[in-house]
Image 1 (cartoon, rainbow, N blue to C red):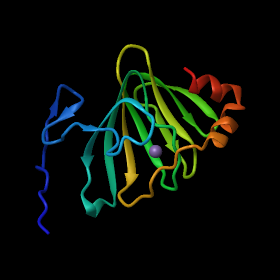
Image 2: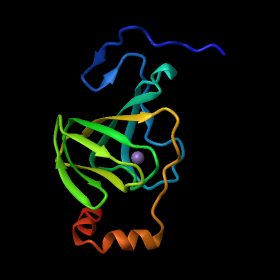
Image 3: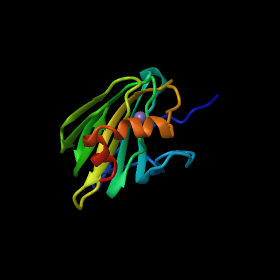
Image 4: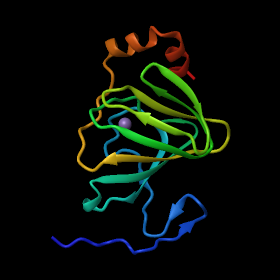
Length: 152
Ligand code: MN
């Protein structure tokens, strides 16, 4: 199987776009609820064993509330937001680092009037995200901090 390798150097375009990197929908299937999120895959060489993606959440937008076995290593690059990891809600800003452990509910929400942009490192081979059932969602909402986050 032939595979096109990216150029050795791909220039940044206006800061948050890159040469040869298509701006993709957040998810290939629109099965999960999310709003105003785009995805760019920056590094995906199979030899790395991992992928580095750049996500951007428009103001008022949010990523899907999900959990999975694989972990995320996130660095915020632009904007302001709130993130939920487990039952912890945190304000995030550029250069903050977020660990999402396996099987932990997580979601990112953009606050303020600039997009929330972040790098996300993941395993190349990974399981599919799970969405909360109605029961799991009401369990999450039994924590008032989480409930406030989810309705923000
Ligand atoms: Mn995830």
